Image 1 (cartoon, rainbow, N blue to C red):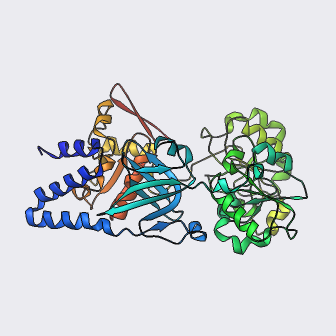
Image 2 (cartoon, one colour; image 1 turned 45 degrees about the vertical axis):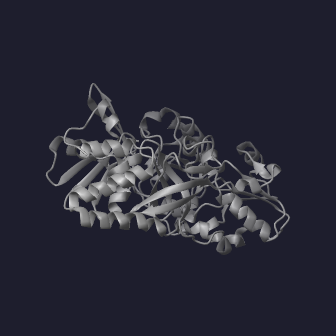
Image 3 (cartoon, one colour; image 1 turned 180 degrees about the vertical axis):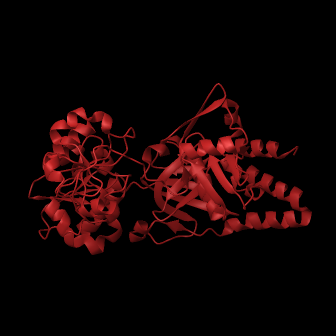
Length: 464
């Protein structure tokens, strides 16, 4: 080995885990001496014998936790660093893979990215602090649902409002409260026994289940059929598919919790004189007849949650939806119903300007802060670029250390623990994986969750 740069390049470009493991052992051998290095290498390799299993709580409904098995939902995958991140709902875990990793119910490793938010199982081995995938399996429980019981968005639209059909949302309660398909009742998969009282008494009535287009709704379908329901359908696209073209309803609980907060836009469509007598805190006044001319008032960020309150809310929501906003919700309740449920009401003139500030994701820093760090280079902060060495040829950020994600855990001890560590890549995907790796090791880590490109060698930053 000539130096660490050569080590990084060899480990990043290696096709197999065995070479990476060997290089790590040699690195330890060189740095700490032959006796300690050999001992740690033996310990590292032997640790593959035991691998504690992990799974999301919902998976426990059907599966016992097993050694060497991870079950959860696909958060993201990086083919550049050969890493996949699984969401366990309460935490996320990063697993490495290579060309020897097998896969099931996907066309290729590249195809996995098409199933974000869907259920996956990873059979893995543990080596040191790192998990290596032997097999990546997409849950394909939908195959247990008959083709005639699988519904499309258009099918569901035709069934809305029918008294002989019960629409059921199987997502977690918190997500249901934010927004759901109009008329749906919650029966979360993770707490089916507690919420099954929301299912109809008549076991012959049609039930339409939806989740996020993954394994949740088929799982609840199996549970409902076990309870004796004979006409169970599944909306296979789920809520993400619904939001592509349709509006959703929110709840009193969600509005109560977010009233007056800048990360949710609440628009009061009533006449200003009526609204000033009593309105939801933080609501912005845009009378419904003036909405069509108020397009420039709305946030640039198309993912901003926007709630419409008052007469004409559905029509207003559809108008704003046509402008490209993805999270447009209707408040299907009156001010009296809101107050009765414990919602605070204020009087006086309403705001006439929308001020939207995105809710910060834990561990992230925004463009403004990232640019400040690059410009000022504070002594208490370390910048780490987790892209591969060949990617840095496109451009570099001055002062940043390049430690590819694939070897970050191996070389983490070279990063000072007494400083703030700010991680970045080109999309934020690998940066978040790196953040989670270092947080588990006790680092004061953060990551830039934005896009980085280079023009004439200089970085250009963009919020996601």
